[in-house]
Image (cartoon, rainbow, N blue to C red; front, side):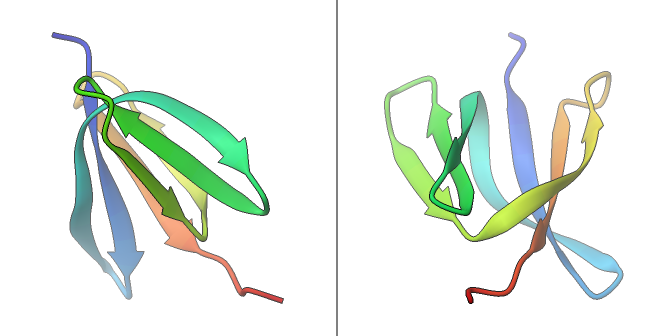
Amino acid sequence: MCEANAYLLKGDKEEKVFENVDRLQLHEGGLLLEDIFGRRLIINARIKELALVDHKIILEEIDSE
């Protein structure tokens, strides 16, 4: 399986927010994450890092202005 898990940075810690991410798209100032089962999450964040070997997407929150 080639899916990744998405983590949101909270200070210097990573909090898992979504598993088995298959698709990631820009969405109205944030991101739309979709998993292999078609479930979706819209999050007000930007990509900080992609660690593909580790199957990790590291996100950081952005201000909602």
